[in-house]
Amino acid sequence: MVDDPGLKALGEAARLSPDNLPLRRHLAEQLLNKGYLADAEAEFRAALVLAPKDPDIMAGLAEAFVRQSSHGEALSALEPLLAVGGYPPRVGVLAARALLGEGSVHKAAYRYHEAVSRDPSVADADLAARLVIPLPAATAPSAPPAATAPSAPSVSPAPPPQPAGSTYLGPSSATHERSTAEVERSAFSFADVAGMDEVKEALRVKLLLPVQQPELFAAFGKRAGGGVLLYGPPGVGKTHLARAAAGELGAAFVSVGLADILDMYIGSSERNLRATFDLARRHRPCVLFFDEVDALAARRSDMRQAHSRQLVNQFLSELDGVDQSANEGVLVLAATNAPWYIDVAFRRPGRFDQLVFVPPPDAEARAAILRILCRDKPLAEVDFGAVAKVTDQFVGADLKGLVDRAVEIKLQESIRAGRPIPLSTRDLLAAAKAARPTAVREWMATARNYVMHANESGAWDELMPWIQRKW
Ligand code: ADP
Image 1: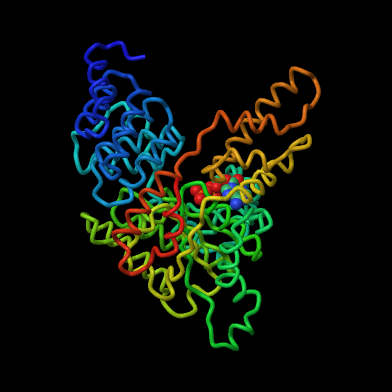
Image 2 (image 1 turned 180 degrees about the vertical axis):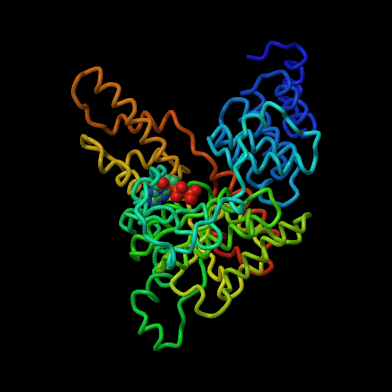
């Protein structure tokens, strides 16, 4: 409850004049300055409806989130800004705070130092002290090539934590450069991905058939190769789908995040990228997956710094390979929430020549996702359709959060009762009531702008039916 008379008067004025953007923005900033964080968040949201692309409002909203420790939401709010090169340095520092809050120290350090290198006045000693800067990968001692190394037994380091459904195959055997990415065996297949039938079919044709039935492809003079860019709102299951594609194919899976590539030292990012492609080439057949690829493949025209452009050029040349067979058996998948920021050069044949939209799940797909998420839990009779009905706009990640919460509560009840109490429809409905969908509406608003105003090439035609719906 706001008890500051000045703010109350401002709030009243905004209520009487709801479309007055400068007034709303001023109110939001004042609320933020005085620490009324939930109210500031609501006002920034209202202002964002009036001016969906205003960077100051997005940054204000993100700051309100960060100060309430809603780090994931802050990152969603900042995403459109971060995807463009040359974003305001203040935004980089906010992103660093949010990333640190989520435990991504490497990424946070990168964002922070990148921002401070452009504008030293945004430096924050407390934050800097909490960011332990990683040693640049290029200076790490390189092991001898695997082929010539004597296979002396050695004590293996403990494997790092792995995502559910995958097996750690050990650290990459190094050549000249080491990649920090790891090689996994995915235990997921398409059966573990609910819905998305069209998307799966597209991947099957593009990625799987050429490997499973090479004679058929050869007979038609087609070559395997070229990558697929999966795009859509955050949390719809792009990463999950990529991992499942590797499992379906029986291929190794190398998942590459920004922290595996981006490095503050000039030249190191390019070396990391090359090492990562080499890692995938040594483990063919392999699905090489780039998450948040917009940060590595942004439009060169948006970039102020020459070394960022060099990274894009390096990425393009790795995709092309030194010769026709360089990437044979390496299927490159990439995911982005912001496909419009990707340099068009990436869409040429042999690169990410197929764009596949991964849509938010409809009610039927939500029920199927919930069924998959609950399948190894103690269950009473559960009406997944009823839960799907009340979770409009929830994406897979939101549904996972909802199930995790319901399970946690059930576990506490079971501990108190001294026996396992199965999860019921009621528990899931209660968890759904307490949860909010994250980012679909905002994402669709951004997509609408691109489809309506920047779709000369027809690249976003596929989105047309989606943005015409009410979100
Ligand atoms: P994105 O990469 O699009 O941001 P993720 O792949 O990280 O989304 O999805 C988050 C989680 O949501 C996944 O780990 C998975 O558990 C769940 N999920 C999302 N979509 C599906 C789906 N279609 N079927 C089953 N689980 C899903």
